[in-house]
Length: 352
Image (tube, rainbow, N blue to C red):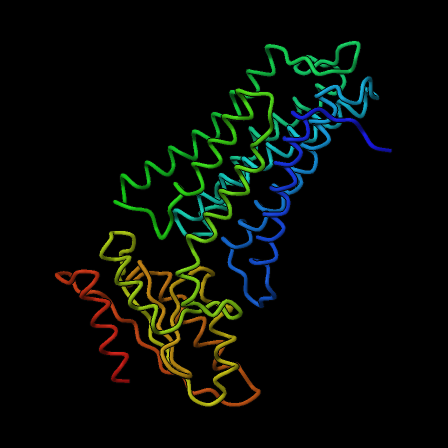
């Protein structure tokens, strides 16, 4: 059976289908078989997956909302709009976590905040669920077409408030740190903003397409850095030094110290031990076979001391083939710039 749809509905569906195709292609590109996917990559993948779900249900929602089907089942109509609104909440929540991680590059930082962020989102989800039964925000008229009342726009205002929070987070971080850590959200923000404006000011639905284009732009903004990285293992190649220097010159990175590791014997086993302890999305460089450099912004700290201790202990405990390990904490001098420190690291590691 062919459903007769208006040109307006067809255009919105084409936009959603285009978004689904883009997002599925992006997921295939980013979800290659890896043994070590970083926390940021996992969040990015979740954003893409939730966006696909949003686009699928938006198609159903737009068909029902258009009235092209005539009168439809009220439960189906209310379920469609509820799912779209709920997935939007999940998208915004995941986006806030992703922004937090990309700014601070700390999984612990995200985990400390996600429960606090979850409370208002849980409240909004409960309000959305109650609306299914009492229809105090989104009503169905006698023809089962949606009627959005005043409380719904208050609800939407709260959603936009969380998006504003993410913008404030980015601005505040940039103000305090001079620049963002390898992160530029502008390429993503423009198409998402255009899609949101089209969806909210016209009868067309373009938010999913704007979101898909934004995620594609954001992914390709990281591609240049990714070519220096062993995606399967999670460490950078030695050539990444030049990128670190560039990031430091631009104020995007402030190296304070480095830990040098050199293993003899079962080098493959040591690499596995090292990768288990070094945090995901860290600046871990493989200098030569068996030698690694963990560049960080901590310098001499409790974190670096614990890493050295834990990695050394696990290496000593390893029984299947002996491992001889040498490690050294290298700290940036007080009168040394970040670029000078990185150049010194390059010279010292080249001599080893």
